Length: 254
Ligand code: ADP
Ligand code: ASP
Ligand code: MG
Image (tube, rainbow, N blue to C red):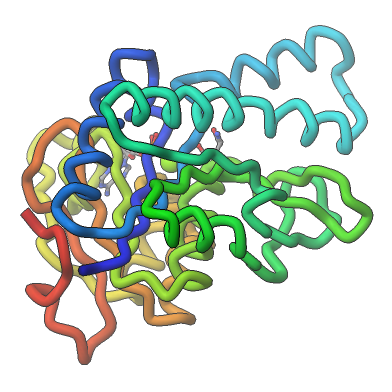
């Protein structure tokens, strides 16, 4: 039995039908005999919409309130996803970043994770439930909600996988993996089967948003295997593993 962290990006949970589709996939992974913890992003363009709403009130809103607002997006998707898992006949608990033990520094809008203490996530898994964690958010020492910067749910997923000692962190998105260039812009781009952390770091730092830079840095630091794949197919995606690890040894490859 493996412990798998799955992250679903906003493009994979854009509407309630997508949430139901993702719930089926999570339950499939669970029923195959794995423990599954999920990190979820806000639905579709929710985060952009929240920012637009704030800007229409004040072009320079207080940073604390901005973070409080933006954490709302992931609360919606995490609770709907837990409901969809119930509807599939399985059980899930959703947790905010703070409930899941994501402690950060105080930099609103660009907070760094200082520690992850996922006791409640572990207890949920121990009871045989799926744990769903809101990505992109944490809590600072003063008890205020913080966000990690745009695309930060990727980093939340890796940090949770490291804290739980997961076997793999799967990043589900709307393309079949990491390509030689953005496949939406360059039609001849090819999918990469397997790539090293260093090379992936380069791609992320050049702006390839398929994986957030800090997520790759975090994975490299803790040797966490990543599998970037599509939530719309069951095809194998791109694996990023430490040198000494055989990519074929990862769980849930097909
Ligand atoms: P999510 O909602 O899952 O977080 P993102 O929009 O953040 O998804 O990232 C996925 C997008 O990244 C793809 O739709 C693709 O257009 C873009 N992208 C940019 N560069 C690459 C690349 N080299 N390989 C794959 N996707 C890329
Ligand atoms: N919802 C946040 C964003 O749009 C975090 C994420 O999707 O990773 O940036
Ligand atoms: Mg993203």
